[in-house]
Image 1: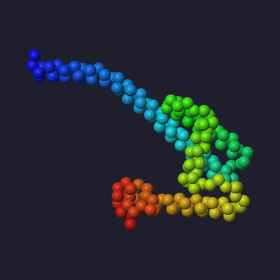
Image 2 (image 1 turned 45 degrees about the vertical axis):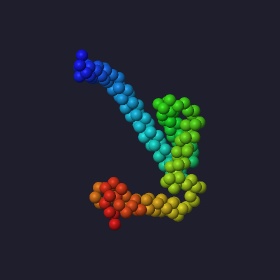
Image 3 (image 1 turned 120 degrees about the vertical axis):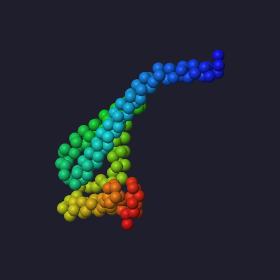
Length: 171
């Protein structure tokens, strides 16, 4: 038998093995894709709950929500967030208790509150206090965003000299 025929037969065996093994890899990829879709959907829902909690806290500080309703609404959102985190932990095969999940939500809210500059304060007494809080929040938002790039339309910050997406000079 010649060496080329040996390589030919060996190549046929390898291709046959790859052909037979391919369905197993497709199923694994499909299962990972479905799981990653579910994880991303749960993470998006978790982010929505955290934002809702931050807005609820902010509205409570502005006395838009009655003091009697606030604890119930906050507890319901915390429970929903805890359920989402438990499901994420199940998908990641990590067991978590309800207390740990609620503590993680509280930490995420605190991080978001630190990032956005929202501080929990005593309820404001007058309309002037409300107006000053609103003005401070508007000033904070204006200092962060400078609008949009005239070339590509992406948002840019005040500190940007060039568009981070397309590189166009903003001066």
